[in-house]
Length: 397
Image 1 (cartoon, helix red, strand yellow):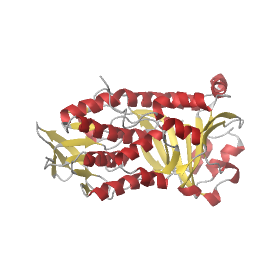
Image 2 (cartoon, helix red, strand yellow):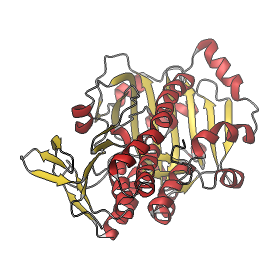
Image 3 (tube, helix red, strand yellow):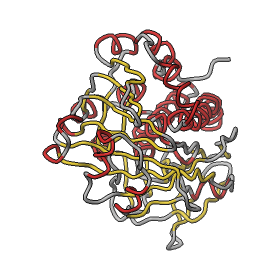
Image 4 (cartoon, helix red, strand yellow):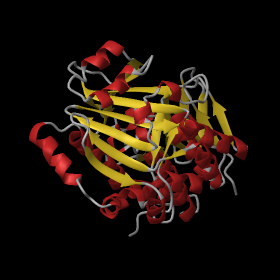
């Protein structure tokens, strides 16, 4: 019997839509509450490892996502001071054979659109926009979510996928963010305006002292994603604002001209002052569970924020499947299956930020670390990350 009450999902971003798809596949109807006036995404490009494509496949939208992605030939790292090659990881046939899916880059909007189309096609997902979750109440059989207008939304369970500043997390956990002091500037540049000598089919990073620069193609190579990160000299507060060309220019003195031309390109920037939170062991509270950035906000250095939200959704669906849609048992299994893995992502991303931004002797150590390393050794090191799939996602006793 399909329950009459829907599952409520707070948040209509990548995590929320992925959760909705996973829930529909288990026979539930879903009500998505989104605070923005429309269901959409902001941002620029993101990188997708094989684990993300495994998740898309499990959610039934693999073909949609593949059709919008750009498949890179390699991941490549250069030293931003002297242009030396630090490491190169081929992502062609051998990579796909090893991990069962490709590595790709894609516009965040195109990931969201693929999930949104999949959700709309089910006919089982209701979307309410301009709906801001204020508080949650629950009893033994249901959960009630109150919005800013005092309207009550009743469901069989609530998935808090309401992002890095989650209201659901604030109610049940109430922990502070950990502001990193690292600022990210993001922009998308048309191919005609992008330097010819950097038009590589690669996820490319230039690593420098207290900073790095990233670029890769989007939308069939018609655009390029440009991301630059630096350690702010100011006291930062977590949030997104318009970027200032003068500010970003001031942080990249000493960077080699080839990499430095990246910061001269964008006409406008979005500025992210980044933060994460300390990993927590409890994400489920009765009939409420956190998912995606609400559960484990991470810094961007592993390019895994969206990928982890997709994995969460698939794992939640699988946990419900093996427990006959019993939410109490499913939430316990979901949490047990995800806590250590996502905490490893959060902690590893912090460490990767340190490696990217190494200076002095640490920079020399980093450059020696990967010099001459074979693709197979890189693949072995990535197995824990990219070897995830729907068949192995649940914790085993």
